[in-house]
Amino acid sequence: MSAIWLNQEAFDRLALELEQLTTVGRAEIVGRIEAARAEGDLKENGGYHAAKDEQGKMEARIRQLTEMLKNAHVGTEPVDASRVAPGTVVTAHIHGDEEKFLLGSREIAAGTDLDVYSEQSPMGQAIMGLEAGDTTTFTAPSGAEIAVEIIAIEPFTG
Image (cartoon, rainbow, N blue to C red; front, side):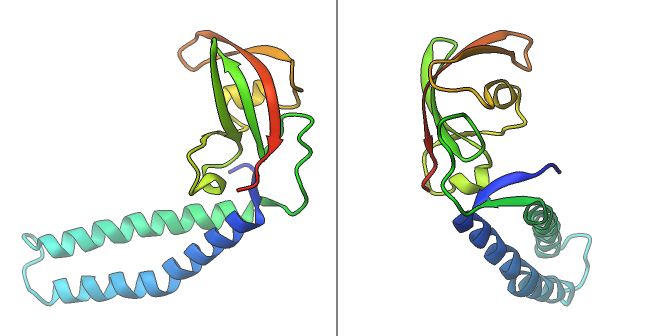
């Protein structure tokens, strides 16, 4: 996983989620698996299979959070909003439509209604470093060339 930008609030929230999952979450799921196992035949035990499925999803989230936090660049200072960068909210004309979005990680936009684009996405790569008034194009996964004009850039305040 490549580095991602997180503000301090998002980093703290994700660290807390990871701690909860690795302690309380694991203990709860183990308890549910043991209780379901005690019911007998595991082949037709829906509670057991549901708990095992939930355990797999939880472990995947733990791995994701661990990797994300390990590779996080925590922005403690205000983001320079003179250019498009991770942690900026960008207003742009994209293929003729005006859109406002956060460039960065979905994890930092939790609780907002902003769309989020990764800086590693085709559009993110194309607009990185641009200033208000700049235009560019990028190739979408569908193969279409999409025009982007940067209208405004502001720091994400959460």
